[in-house]
Length: 151
Length: 151
DNA sequence: TAATTTTGCATCGTGTACGATTTTATTGTG
DNA sequence: CACAATAAAATCGTACACGATGCAAAATTA
Image (cartoon, rainbow over all chains, first blue to last red; front, side):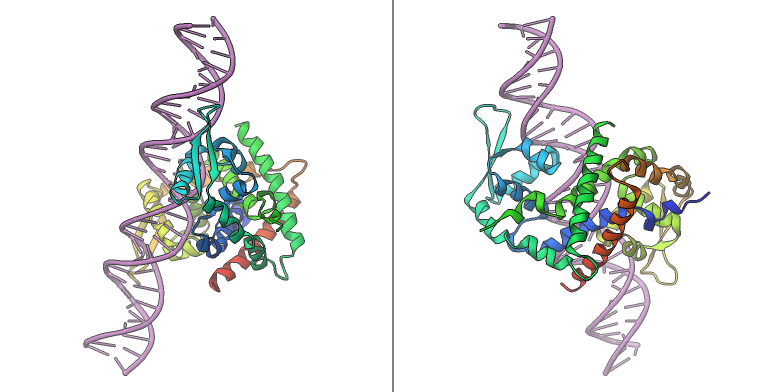
């Protein structure tokens, strides 16, 4: 029986898993300067784009459930990055709003993406390849999202 | 000041992070049948390929440190999937060896990769694209590994 | 309108990740 | 040989992920 497919090197899953962790690590020096973690950075990215979102809207954007986001947002509130308050229209909703400090971090974060891209690109990895990588991953995400719904 | 690079949609990091989590989720139904988690599956993949590795060898293969692997291996020992024993030649090394149960799981896992590939592939995502994805990711991993060393 | 269902969020328990520190064993050096 | 340096694991503390459950508010329905 041929079990070569079980070799780690032949699996598509493992490189994705490893790359994800390595990229988080690559962000770390930049995010350390802001005093935030990578998932916290993602939350800020969403709120910098458009402030005052419900927890539910954040879960959709980030594809994370409330069991992950609730404690994370609580930590960020304690760090004075954002405020959580119940909506008056619908008491079930919790509105997340950036504080002044949370807003001010944006200017400090402005050059992180290009810096990171700079550390990634080289002779072998062109910008074109990165763009194509993103396209394939976006398609893969859509595929996997529908799969999970049908399980 | 243009802050469009800070938009979540324009970041390469986020799709990798999301894909990684979605893929782990896609594995879950298969791994649940074996009673193991995704990182535990990765350890087994390595040991099925070649048994009797030190913890250090596993950290290199999986790019995980001992602070992650030690507790993970302990849990797997408690599940009777593997044995941990000090090497006699060098008492610092801990040799990881599969138990009968750990070895037997291999046959049950044999069709997981192709099943998973089946759930991924469709009109938009061809096998060629997946292979190219893996190549780009492998290059990216090498790039990021050297970056971290120089930090 | 009272009972039921749904929705939005929080909490709990378990399992990773990972920086930092500790412990023990081996190696290198004077 | 003594002793510092190095190496391999383990441990600790913090922060995610996530399945399962709980809970209160709103919507639905009988």
